[in-house]
Length: 393
Image (tube, rainbow, N blue to C red; front, side, top):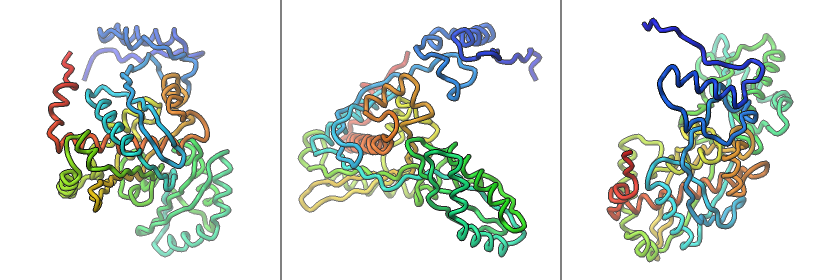
């Protein structure tokens, strides 16, 4: 147990979002730790724009941003060539994704399809026994329109699409599924579901006791539920790559890559992984940081299913399905200065752009899968990291 005096981080009760308030906290930290915060204090953000994004602001973490591309996308919302900002400190990452994008462009681009997009909040209702829980479930189905009205009264853009049900003992788990416009929608769906649950409690004969999150929404953690029922966007990127391009540009061939995929599928099954591909978390995390996404959502968004085919003509079909890609182009951190600039670089800032951005994310992930898989098979993986990824300063 320390005997040192425990001092609170200073705050300005009148206006805590000023350069002076940030400087006071930096001095406080420097005096008590001996650390220098010169670089942390070097930022271009106006602190007055930060309420709702950060508390006890002291500065900014400057993560290097590299540019990869052009990424050629044939999507329903994203069409054309894009230059993708990737914020990372991992050497070789931008180079690897850039290489995969170059191959995709030569092959005609990545075709992207957004299948569905929902955000959830999942309350659980508690009863005396399983039969009462079952009766309640039937009542919820019959009153869906009223529940929908109560939920949607809290939001201007959120729409309750459907409510799923699972019975466990004397409990009924519900999973409210919303479309959320261009916002990721976690807070939106939480507020709407609370209003719906309060309406249910007031209207259900005899009342009903609930816990707002029964954990089947699996917020910021992976779940098999998300793989099957989607959380955020379920989006697919696919490409057909000629064998000659793999030989000329990647130093391998379609047949060798296909056998390697069989091996990695077996290894992934042995390990119990939630992604049978290579490293989609790498590109998604870098893209998330650059564009102001909630970085913790990589915990859900990294899950993916890679499917390949060796075509009769020797071409290689490659796809990646991301079932729980949680992104936004409006709200949260997307409006901060550097993050907004990166979204504008992609033509994805603001309302009406989230499906386009989701398709770009999936195509970026596909480019990274192709590049790393080819590097591993061709024997370039370790050499590339030795050459580009060894900063020991």
